Image (cartoon, rainbow, N blue to C red; front, side, top):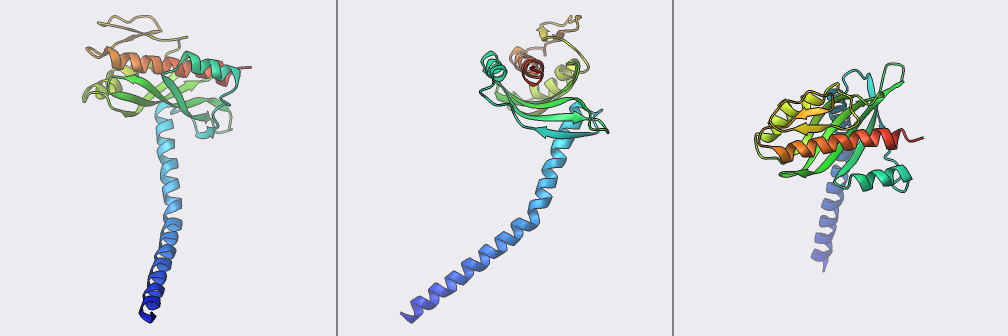
Length: 201
């Protein structure tokens, strides 16, 4: 009986010490982890909105709001995951950065960031995560997405075989219509969200 009590006390002490050590480690690493996350967010935002001095997270709209509900109906395959206000040195808003997900990718969901200026001009688009066929994701980053930079349109359309000339036209990636459509639809959803949800009066 004494041995059982002794073993139980030893086990209790080991568990207590392990718990204390885990709590200490968690407390020590929590701040660096949070700072690392903030730095990653800052870098992603700056890539698509380099003119901004800093970025502030904004809460997503209430899902029951009429403008947002209407947006969700129009864009069932797109979602806005995070919103960051892009601000200048004085704290004035220059536009926003939206982190979005499109569910139409050839290999699954596509996550990307889009910077949108106050006049609805696309400042830049960057891939956050993609499961597209190897090579297509690279083509999207190097060939497709740069075409949207500093362009303004109510919505974009893609042209197969090259020859895009109008402000709202984008050349599709060769042999990758699905990927091109996914990004184009996702970017159009982001512009719609900015104009008709965030700026809804």
